[in-house]
Length: 406
Image (tube, rainbow, N blue to C red; front, side, top):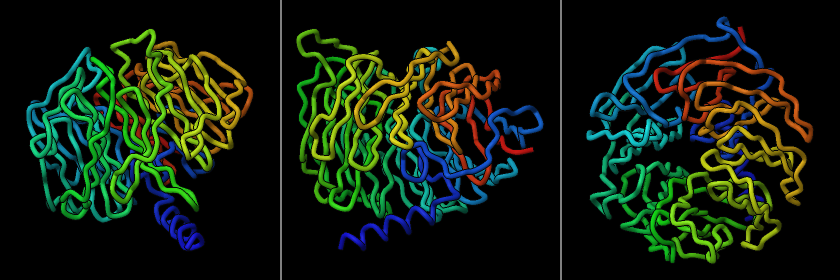
């Protein structure tokens, strides 16, 4: 059975290898398998720039020659299917009632789509969850907020549903509910729901993080991050297996400590960020603490692990490199000084860090800090990048860029 699970995992990864099917890539960890990707680029590296109908923070997903991205369009929210030459193939309306919040820090096109190569799933902050085929035919639609509870949170619902096998996993963590769901990806029907317990207060009840799966030969866990805790759940029925709450000092409670950055996993390790320069935790798959860094968490960008090195990009542009297993710090250096909202990615020995002002800092992967290049697009970027078939796709508030070799 163990060998079957390992072989199934390897087959799944190989099928997805040249695509970017989820907001953090094939394994939801921000790692690309691309090789010989440029660090420095100029206008000749920009294959195309496609103006978008409105703003959005959703990461595009890519499968072979098709790109899917959600966007505002006036008061509406739309899904665009774009070919890899930058031509819009079709557009579908997902919902209406778009709302922007706090100087462009979010709108209803904040959760990212997902694809399995046959269908694409979209979720927008109004609660509209839908499935389309690659020709734009709607397969099913449900409004999650109407089926369960209206979203009550300070910003907008930004959590991206997790596509895994035949299921979609959702975490709906807000003032009206603390709910974890598993849905059938083919129908949208509920498989199970779990009411998550929390003693969080005020804005701490709100989570903008996305669920993550930890999986090895012996363990499968759904990780849910929010309301002062990370919790691990059974994929079978949603039952809580363990929780860890060392993310918030209960004696000096900050009522605005909402969680945005998502956990990241590698074999034998779960790294858990918090918020607002708080702690970062390294946990084993059974929830035991390996290490604790008391300060320096990313506020919005999710962590990145590659080759047992942990990279944390803080909102002020500080890049921190640590030993992922022990928590030892190797360096802390400033990249661009403007605000950072995107999660860093690894491509071919390089870490790509993108600021909200459109500055892409490329750092050599490793224990020593070395900037290889700085690239500037001069457009606001809050969406994490997608990498597929030799191209990095950067979604700004105004346009979608395709950048690669000349």
